[in-house]
Length: 423
Image 1 (cartoon, rainbow, N blue to C red):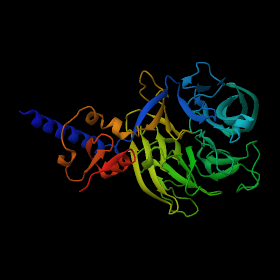
Image 2: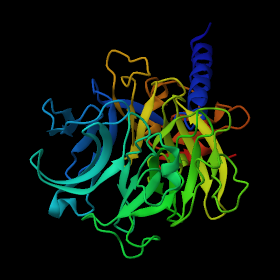
Image 3: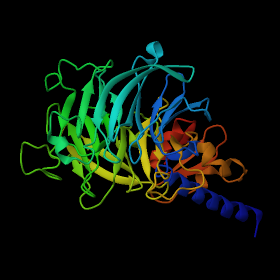
Image 4: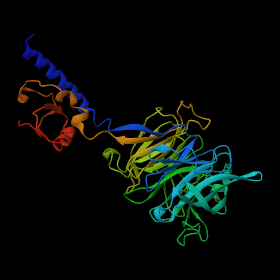
């Protein structure tokens, strides 16, 4: 075999491999890394402006990750209720840089009864002080405690509560159970709440645990557990009734709001949820992500809330990480997910539970995918290279390196100094 023929065969092989890799680049546009591990049932996460990450552990510990390292000393240890209750939600004040207010939702025991409360603290140097109870006596139990808290675009604090196993709570306006609550940051009731002198914003919920606002329409979207199946995604409107326990799935009675989506006979057990308000992974932008427990996947929804419809619903990472408790987008634009395999219902790996971060793959495609081409002087005229159907031939402007790429990859490479060859 002549030297020229060997080079030609080798060139064809390398270009075929590069074409294959680039054609699959858009299918795997992210990678996953561990931020923290060996956590005890992490439940919720919050991001401080200075880069710290706070995370609640259901057993009653508030932890902090500082400079990428999980501090072994908890920020706070609380005496909490057992079962599925405990230290659950966390939120930082929108003006955290000035006031350092940190909010927690947790289950507590009062004699022989369990309740939940929302408490505000002042944080300084990873210590909490100046406790102020904003709301207490929220119905609690060993299950169905709700627990997610978030500030909305309106600056109000929203709280999800479960009906604590007492289904009539969800329809009782005098009960705080089975509701979405809305309050001012100091615990007072907003003047524009739908029910006078009440923090109740919507009713008829079973056990909602995820909420976030659509970046396009501003609508509030929640995820909530159904009765073994028929888990729901609901668009929340002030004062509306979402039916539990009188209705599940599509509502026949118009006085109950039908879900935007439900899981049918399949159980997802949806927990924390967030819209991907980031362009880090462009194809994920504005999608709604839900962490699922029994479903053991990250549910990705493409929603059109101007038309109130679901465009697509897809399960990501099915079975890869076990039970997932929360999904939240950080200030870096990356998606963070919390596993929940030590909650008594999962199969924990040795390093569970974990916080995982999903980041985009390196944008320098020519370094990651075309490095084999740059390591050899092929000695072949670039225009002698023929690409298979559906691929374009590009040249590195500085070296003349050829590559067969998909049209979508070609656009990225052109911006990095590659040039399209003449036809």
